[in-house]
Length: 61
Image 1 (cartoon, rainbow, N blue to C red):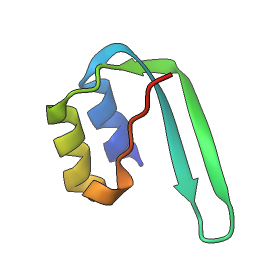
Image 2: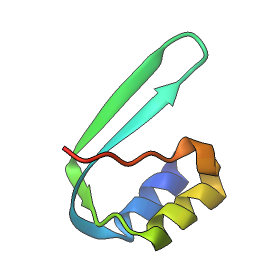
Image 3: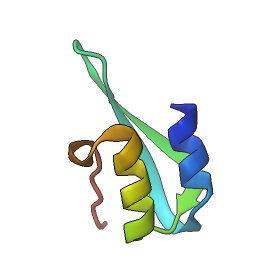
Image 4: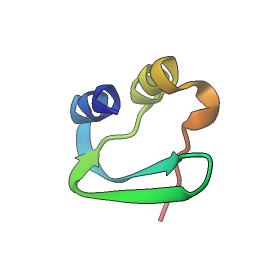
């Protein structure tokens, strides 16, 4: 989890961040109110390397 946070911090911007954690029993959505990122292809690729392509989701609104 620390690796993901460190990567996100490398891409500052205006986009809100939430992290979804599935522990096999329950799914938690953790909003990160003090973190804002700039979503771009490089960030998504970097996260996909760590988490896997199917674990990355971006949404507007």
